[in-house]
Image (tube, rainbow, N blue to C red; front, side, top):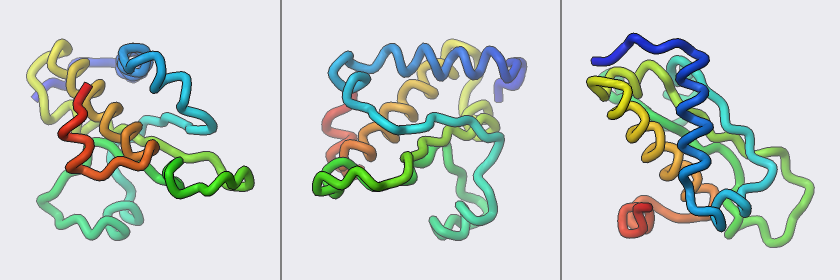
Length: 124
């Protein structure tokens, strides 16, 4: 487990991960807040029906582009990256940067309407 990283540096890694996404993906992400929380909230855990031994690295909350049907009256979508579980899944900052990127890509893919099978087939 890697834990020697400041909140500031963690946020930098999130920004760098977003910049690593393909340009077409970055430019298509609109009205989405990307936030960092230490852990999933009790409400998020309950909504996802997570057991006490299950962890969550990231979460997309919103209406995927594919399901919006041109609606413009929706609140902003939110992608949350969970710092403590991400730190617990790696051994050093290099691995953390890669896991942050992978998790961010996964949640951005949900924003575009991809399911888990589609996401794994299209890893970037």
